[in-house]
Image 1 (cartoon, helix red, strand yellow):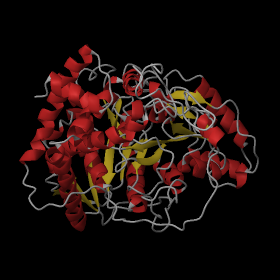
Image 2: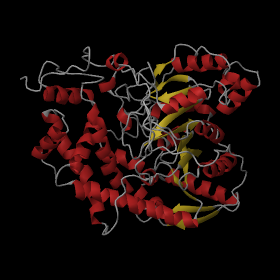
Image 3: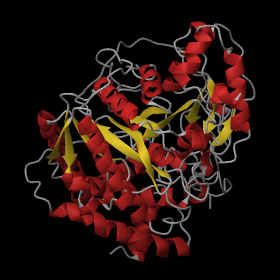
Image 4: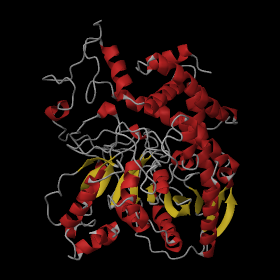
Length: 95
Length: 475
């Protein structure tokens, strides 16, 4: 049901550089799972409201009071390329 | 020493509070066992007991707790079973972990799990599979397999895990211990490395129902750092009920019929447990949950969809692995994720991304959300007639390592009986109800939102009547 091109398109959206072998395997495995999942599309769900969340809470607000946050050093300690003021990344344009 | 290990956590806490046992001695006894772990249940064990006094006056008495890897713990590896987070030590701790430490349950160690909590066998961990203490050729269940195996094997007095679609209840069942998935929102998710945010919920793994109530009592509560968490209405009581008189239990035949794939040995045990419940005074009647058989399909759209968004944060920029940092940005992202994620995680990211992609969103994600509404309505209607729904936790006992690895769909079907409650956000508990072929079987009770105290009470009465002996798994 899913072909190679579709798998490659989705992998690009998901920022996953799959190997050739993975692309083939993914096409077969996802198709198998989707075949099973398809069954829900046969249900009559006309007029049913979707549930995105089971708890009926909206716009949870709290007082806007400044509190201490983690230090920059503590956060940057885990970064692959910590810079003095932030996270180092490769150039978006570099080849 | 072995006598210490045979105490339940509540009994150990009681002894410490009475001055008959030193908290440090108990910690060291478990630390030694956890360090000598042959099940691969732990990914990290504390080097020494925390230096502090006064445990005897805390509610949990200094009885240490094992914590699933995906809970952030300050300065301690928190990797969610993934290579992409290998060696990551967060600068803060999850609220639930802090609350337990404050209540007198210090961190014993971190437990192995399926990568990002995706799996039902613990074979998807980047740090190797966990072995089931009842039979080391078999899986402990998943995704919280390390927590379940550690408690069953007496490597920890109790543990916490998370349940998104069965990840507490199923491993508890397969390891012969108690596992509670609380109402969605009962425990803060702050500091839990997210899988599917509308479903993820933390809960206890314990040897008995009393321990589950005690640990859960100190996990629950509103947290200003998780705006979906709620204040638990009323006290979480320790269970004391001795019978089930007047309780109406519903058997959901839509799930327990042929479609559920329930093994004969599990079915036999389930029927016997139902009869036992009846002899304790409960009334048992069939109950309809007509949309529940579709829950698994809806779940395998909703959970991967949420996961594909949650896992976008693992991109080699702020923490964890980075691959090919000398290439351009998108190449770095894509190769880091290719190398850092395991097969199942990639599968779910792909499934979720596909389900949310342009042209498919309504057909998959929108439909699944409507099914979710119908499932909640089914439960609401059922709870007008019944106090609890009762069913097996897992359709099968612990299976052999590797048995389902090549068939993702067969693996997903392990959650057929656990997923409906997750989608509805209602609490469910699994208690050990006996053995089939020498392996533990779990019995599941589910109730309306925030019915945990009643649920624990009923589970306690049943537990006493069943008289399950899990000591063999402790060796």
